[in-house]
Length: 234
Image (cartoon, one colour):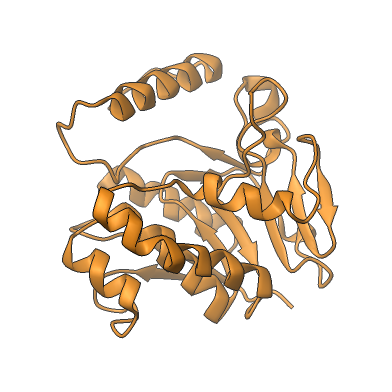
C-alpha cells in the first residue's frame, strides 16, 4: 500500500516564492496527502553520507540521498520543487507497483535515462534501498572529486540490470516505468495527457557559476520553453 505523503527537499535557505506555487499545485491535485519538507533540521544526523555533504553544503548531493531516505522510510511520492502536477496519478499506484518512475529521455536521445524528479514508492522498498546504497558506495569518490553523478545516471543502470528496454511504458516485476511524455513532456501536445511537467529550474546550482554544465542546462531549459511555447520570465 502506498503512503499518502508527498516529500520534497529544500536546503540552504528559504524556498523561493515562485516554487511555493508548485507546492500549492500538489495540494490541489493530491488533497488528502501530507506534504513533508525535508531540510537541515529533520534529516538523519547520524547518517555518514548526510553528515559529510551537509558540512560541505553540497545541497544537490544531499537532496539525491534524502529523497531516497524519505521514500524508503516513509513511502509516498517525491517531487523536485520545480515539478508542476497536471493531474493526479494515483491510478498508477496499485498495490502491485512497488516503485514508479518515468523516462526522462526517449528514442530521440542516445540513452534512455529514467528520471528522479518524480518518484513514487512503497515504504521499505527493496529497490529504493539498493538505489540509496549506490550513493553511500560512491560518497568518497564524489566528495574527493566534487563529482556529482546525477540521479538518472545512477538509477538507469540499476533498472537495466532488471531488463529495462526501449523507452516505452514497461513493468520490471513490481517496478513500473512510464513513457517520457507522462512525467516529462516536451510539447504542447504532450501536455494534454501528462501527469506532471518538469520546469528544469536548476535551483541547486551555485549562483553565478559559469561552467559547461550551466551552459548546457540553460540551453536545455530554453529548448523546453520553446517547445512548450513559454517565455522565460525568470
